[in-house]
Image (cartoon, rainbow, N blue to C red; front, side):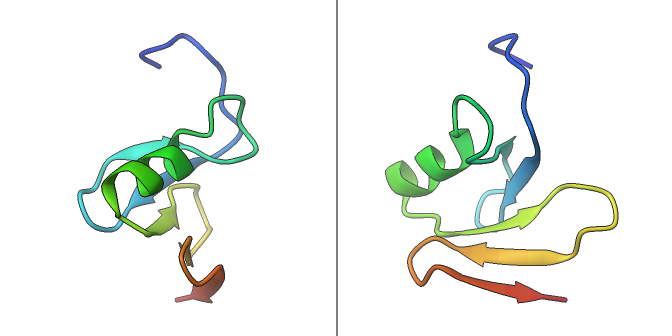
Length: 63
């Protein structure tokens, strides 16, 4: 929203709670945030999606 760009999906950092765009989006803000802050786990912020992703282990977990 801040940059005026479109996003494909939104992801929420499980450490600080910020919601950013996914790696399929042009700016890939979620993975950039994970790399720059050492906050490796995100969850989907999409309706009816219940999973977590760890950038370090490259593993997904559903809940």
